[in-house]
Amino acid sequence: MKNALKILVLLSCAALLMCAPPTAPSGTTNTNTNIINITGPTPNTSPSPNAGVLPPGSFIRIGMFGETCPSGVTVPSNGSRQIRAKCTASITATPKDGQGVDLPASVHGPNIAWSIPAGSGVANCLADSEPFNRTCSCFGLGTFTLQATVKDLTGFADFECIP
Image (cartoon, rainbow, N blue to C red; front, side, top):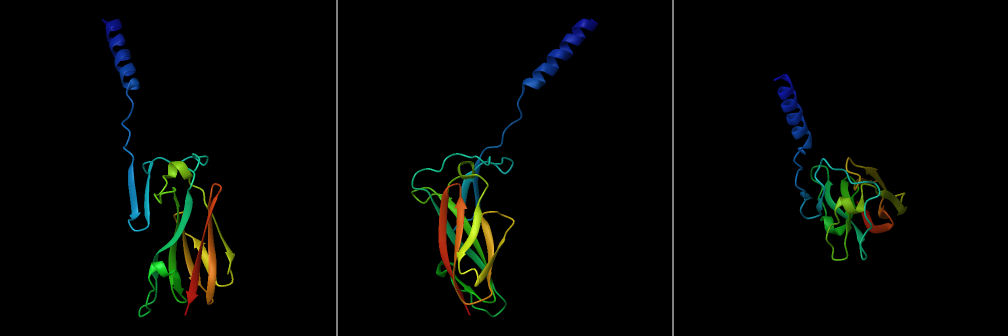
């Protein structure tokens, strides 16, 4: 009787070990439907730093998705790429395929390098909690170029600091 009970316990344990936990379905994360639509792994899954190869025709889109200004200051449209001197702009870089569709993080990976190759005396762009975003503010008037590099692909965008 004891041996039969031991065998039953061992079989039960083996059956439990063979069961895999359910996996969450992958889906779409919409941070801002006008700018970022990244389809990729679930939030519990991190893309590897050596993620897949970017498809031919891919590019990096750099754009504003918001601007915070003091009360009474008129905010230009995001598409104008103008930042008021007293305001702070939220800027993002999004890797896209040749048709302009956002690439999933599993393809482009988590790494991005930012720089201001021209006009660094006009604006300051600081890291955000999301590596693909920057918070930029102007301390002068004029234009600056923001550059973002993902893998071997680099995108550029010009912005203007206005009074």
